[in-house]
Structure formats: C-alpha cells, structure tokens
Length: 308
Image (cartoon, rainbow, N blue to C red; front, side):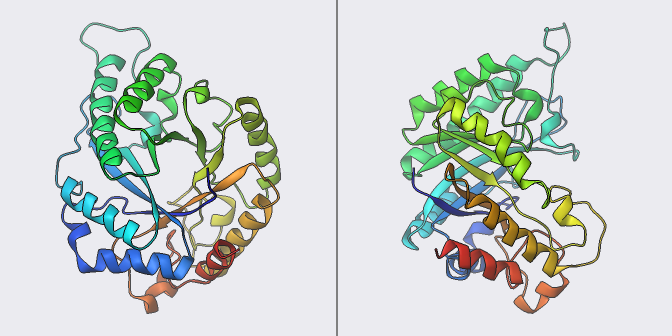
C-alpha cells in the first residue's frame, strides 16, 4: 500500500452540496494547499437513536449517488486517489460509539441482527459505488466501539463487502481501541483515529506498534487532527472543549504529530480531519477554532510534510 498523504473531505454534506461550484473549488484548493495524494470522502447516514435499527442513507442529509460519483471523478481528474468512508451518525446527537444492543436477544427489544441487516445494506450500497468508480479503499465503519465485540457479524459484513468490492477494505477504530479489535485479520488494512494528546504520542505509538506486528497488516491513521483552540492539543478529540482561538497550538500539534510518526516506518499515512466541502473565506481563518486548517499556519506544516 502506498503512503497515504490524505485528508477527509465532505463529511456532513447535504444533498446538492457536491454540485456546487464551491465544493469543487474546495477540493482543488485541498490539493493545491496541502499537496495531498488521497482524499477520503466521508458520508454520514443517520439512525434516530443509539438503539435504533434502521439506518437512513437516502435522505437530504446525504449527497446523491450521482453527485458523489461526479465528485469522485473530479478528485481523480486532480490526480487524487479516493477512499470512500460511509459512516453513521445518531440523529439525537449521541456519539456512534454508543450504538449498542443486548447481547442476548430479548422479546420486544431491538436486536443486533436487525441493526447489522440495515448497516450491511448501507455498506453494500457504497461498496458498489466504490467498485464502479475504482476507489482505492473503502472504510466500512468508524469509531463504533460498542459494536466491535460483535466479531461474527463484522466478519460476515467484511465478506459481504468483498463480494461487491475488489479494492482494499479497512475499519477505522477509535483512539485507544487498536488492541481491542479481534478481527483485524479479516481486513486488508488496520486504521484508527489518532487523536492522541500532544505529550503522549510515544506511549500510544509503542502500544499500537505491537498490534501492527501481531497482525502484520499495513496501518494508517484514518483520522487525526486538532482544533485551533487553546487546550485542544491535550484533548484533540474534544470538539466541545471551551477555549479561545489558538492557531499556534494547532500548528504545534501538527509539527509534533509528523515528527513523532515519521520515526515509525509501519505508519503508512494519514486521513487528516478534516477539510470542509464549503470553505469559509480565507481572511476568516483567524476566527475559526475548529479542525479546519485552510488559511491557518497548520496548513503550511501539512504541505511541508506532504511534500517530502
């Protein structure tokens, strides 16, 4: 697997967003400003609650298949590889890591089998698009911590996706969970969300390294990044953290991220979080406290490292 100099793009985009001129301009600027070689197009289906069994991937909260296919083609025209990432969010705001059901079926209660039926349908729909458009990889789930113990169901899902899609398949586990997933052997690539504190990279990379050696699979951080907010470098996963805008703290986080990971030859890249479909005006970057790097000092750090 080639080294992934990647960024996540398109998350939470609504129907029609990819058809806008600004969306393609954003993709073009992503390539020009960061020197990425790969874009991860992330989609966000919805289920009502963490215990709902039906996943909606056809509403206005999703870009249409036609515009998705057009955007994949545009990314390829720019010379980018494409990874497709169909994720699921919970409509009531609960983090997807808490999607969960009883391990033993109970009458009149929602069941794992019902949820996996709907989730598999969702994944196979986009696996077919990934195959049609020749995406280099599909990420079949993200940070779904409570589901990960359902090994049998995940192995069945992976096999079903393989029947539809012939490229690389991975699953994006959450931070600190790399050594808890028991079915890495069924996948082509191991990936995780690397939102680790700026002062703890060495400890966490030592731990992850043991997993990679055990399974002998390629690895990349399918997500990692840091808001431009005071205190965020120590809690980079906490997007609700209260703090003033701090562009330098974000910049320093990225410097440390690249300095620490370049020493680990088993790390095959990143899908940095994230690049917006519709960007703010560049002069407004100094006011933005989110994960965006457009127009911020961190953007230059990323380009510098992605140009090596």
